[in-house]
Length: 253
Image (tube, rainbow, N blue to C red; front, side, top):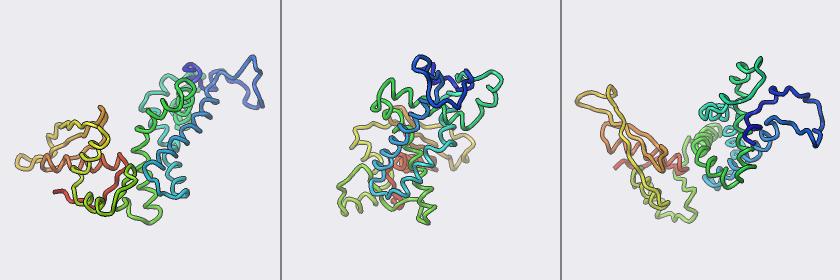
């Protein structure tokens, strides 16, 4: 499976007009895996959108999914994983194909399809859901703007299906940092604050603090501010967005 995932159709240069391969000579390239991976990724992203934004209508949801699984996004992720570097292609076309956005995007779909066949859907979701969550929240923001709405909803609690109006109003006054800590505690997650070198980003009398919020060894949010608390609050705000929890007007106290 791995070898076929990393084999572009140009490597064997087989005719493309055939209706069906012979049983004893199936196509050895990754096009079938790409086709399968496209379906798997679309399903996972659709489920993720419904999980984060359970009340969104089908029209906006379709626009969000199109942005998330579009070639620019897939090609970017593919390059970050270094997938095109190991793709087997016809030597005469290698340079052009390796830098093609279409080929890069198709390759990660083939990888998803191969992983699905090898490990199953549940395993694939443990990789794709955390990876694409940030893309879903950003696409949601862009589609809201397209619909002439504010970039962020006032309060959005995708993982809490029974939040009362009283507790929602209370949460809106807690501050991003407090709300962020609360949701991590509810999910049984710990957080590590990693401070970065902020030299040159402030003055001697007014330093700039830069921090990353690490959850399960992954950066879920980053922020900067003139105080450590302000930097944490900004990181918490980004972390909440990446968790699908959008609160636009929150006190910083």
